[in-house]
Length: 470
Image 1 (cartoon, rainbow, N blue to C red):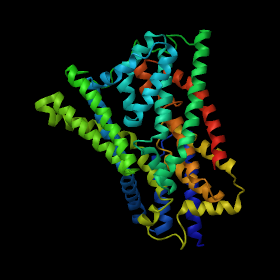
Image 2: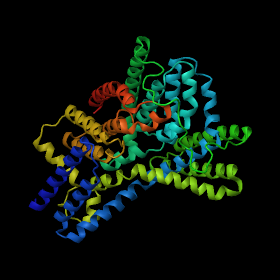
Image 3: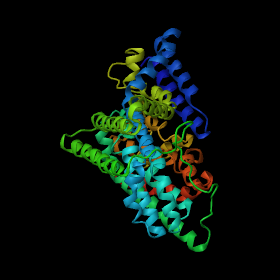
Image 4: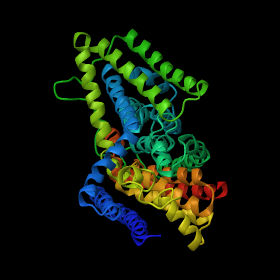
């Protein structure tokens, strides 16, 4: 192989390690990714202009790959905002509040409701959607606000976000980086998500009940405010402008029914990946426009656009750090030839695959080492507090190790996805816990401390299960 091509592979690997190092130090990786893309471009084309233009082209490539995910998240956030302002969210949740009679029931019911809603609306909107409604109910039956925050975190930002079965944004990122279908990642993630979810929530519940009985966890533990603030208020816009009761009840019935019909359509029509995402996004957009017209009447058309703008602002704010990282890691696969031309040797399936094959011939990699490494890498990439920024890296490394051991790419990819999102998606990184901590009025650092042991125990058990499944 040409010396330049060998250098290309080593440089790519060096920048992967450098990106991981910056994430460990909780530093932003955008500049590192840009330098990495330029360096790879210089080695591949020997042209400064082509390598600099390659940065822009790689961003375009990443955005094209991610745009469906960004769009559906933006639409769902727009819908969540109008549900809060119309009061429909309270009506949707009210039947559940009658079931909450003890602290234990409050923990599990709030967690399960958070998980279900997060599958359709994602955790960040779901926190605002149900937090202000269910928190007062939980406090009345004796569950501390910190316990409410733990339940919302583990079930929403943990189980729901790491599985992402409905919107399928997370598995698409990892599947694209690993070069496998989204359905494969989702299928492989089911047993791992179940194990991680059951172990983590049961351990967290046990610790919570133990500390409540011992007096180490009281109603005031970790409290920083009297109660949740409504995050939907804006200057000049009332916090809530509820629709008439009959309309709210009708909307609370019809909206979940529409999403349930989406799930039926996915199953009957075998819709997955982008097709399933498009169906959810289209439904969210339709409901947002109808509710806007009902709420604002003559101003409904203009206000519906405002809700969409708010959704897009959230979507691009969340994915802003993801695009440069994804742009770099896509170069490890098919994107390299699209951006810098057919530089790699005949028979090469991408830089990552080449590294995997080389690793298979030089390093005695086995399933245990591969699974443990993916779990650690996933956790490290989550240290920046963004559960999604490291998914492309997790997928790429899963592809590398699966090429080395000859199997298990879907399971390794799912494991890296779960580790990255559980750590960085909002369960043990304080700066990622702020939404749930704010709505519950608790200290995010105390919340992170409470979540740490259950999440670590869950990751260890899940990694062992992954080793058995590969």
